[in-house]
Image 1 (spheres, helix red, strand yellow):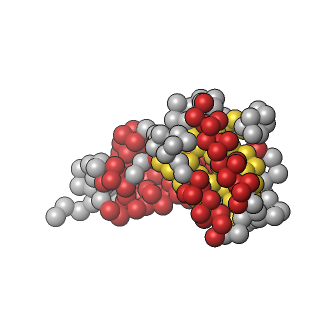
Image 2 (cartoon, helix red, strand yellow; image 1 turned 135 degrees about the horizontal axis):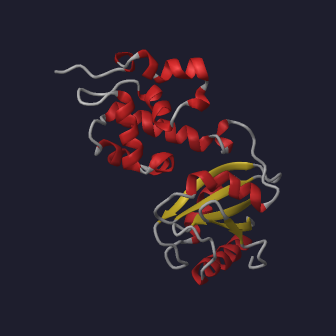
Image 3 (cartoon, one colour; image 1 turned 120 degrees about the horizontal axis):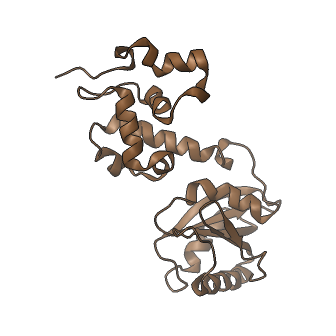
Length: 228
């Protein structure tokens, strides 16, 4: 079995770690930064070449955030260890803008809800419905995935939306879903679903505060639009 090529096998002037320490992280390319994390290449590629190829084949840094474990494993030169490193890196990147960092996250305006979910939803290739559950002070209790795929009021059942909210003792909820097209303009189905969830919330005593539709770096609040 041939030995994998390591960063230390590169000439010193080409070693990303040494360049980072000497000149600063901001001077490194995306491929070099990824190479420091993955550490070793394979018998055919050094780690910098492998990292650059991973970025190219997954669609750059944004692609890394949405690539599945199966897709990583399908790449030449990627085994379970490197796939796990890449998935962990993607998840940490998403959590930097999330309440999952351990701090309390309070939602005072639609922008707060949009920022909470934007990085984890803007690049999704399928529609995904999430429910943000809040306590009486509008602090996030948790966020739950409810549905994946095309959303409409006949498929998304209110029971799925409210079941976890009831268990968590939520005072209110915000629902949010993405438009893979990047355009957050609400459809008639989006509006119908919103009204249905709102009416069910009244019966349960859990208010629907808003429905946030996520686009590519943009969002629309149905509350702000006067639809809710």
